[in-house]
Image (cartoon, rainbow, N blue to C red; front, side):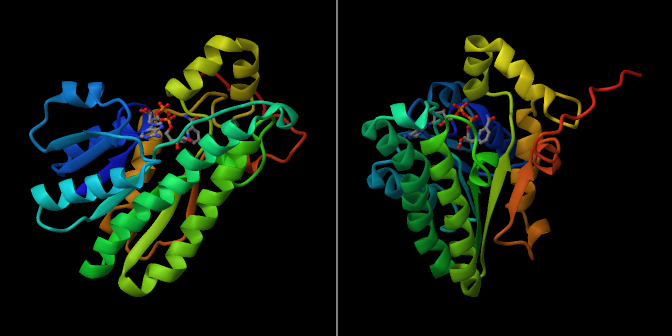
Length: 252
Ligand SMILES: NC(=O)c1ccc[n+]([C@@H]2O[C@H](COP(=O)([O-])OP(=O)(O)OC[C@H]3O[C@@H](n4cnc5c(N)ncnc54)[C@H](O)[C@@H]3O)[C@@H](O)[C@H]2O)c1
């Protein structure tokens, strides 16, 4: 039994589909569940709701316990929003919303699921952080602060809950093709191309499948000795020294 948040699109939808393909039961939450509902999968329960409301976390947990084996094996704590503006133009309401969705809600869901995992003495939690959780990106103040918070949350929970057999890791995606980045490509194609050209591995954005593979691995028994890891999946961008550009891809 797995719970996925932000499951209605992008990485969360990719995680949900892969879990279902592998035979898992999934409780999938999102503000908009229309794409989940169209899957019409017998092992899937979709729950509309805003993760910034703590009762949404309780509803996800109740649904998981009701339909499954009474256990929650894995949480994919993935819901998130991006907002980019120069720091001096960022409004308090924008800051509050980004912190609420990306960081506070991440804790609300981890907390509700954690109570079950503590009682059952085990489980795996994967928080979706970002490369922006490890270094700043231009005009990304609230997003960067929220994702640095997700990194801290991940490390703290890994340390505190290891004694219950609960593993807590984070996926830190680089630039990945989802709705979040497609709007960026449409609004600023030059900036998008410049951003992609900074990726050493092929000069391209990552795919949903490339992120989902790491997410599922970290929440699987294959990763039984891995906790507190911030898994950077970014085509090598983080390895590139600042001020340098990778050489362009070489064709066959
Ligand atoms: N795409 C990237 O390049 C990239 C890079 C780094 C990190 N991330 C992170 O990956 C995660 C998924 O992003 P994505 O690219 O798939 O974005 P996306 O916009 O395609 O999907 C995000 C989903 O979260 C849902 N959501 C947003 N706010 C919510 C709320 N308050 N309550 C419930 N659901 C809510 C949205 O409805 C949407 O379905 C996010 O945490 C994001 O910050 C993405």
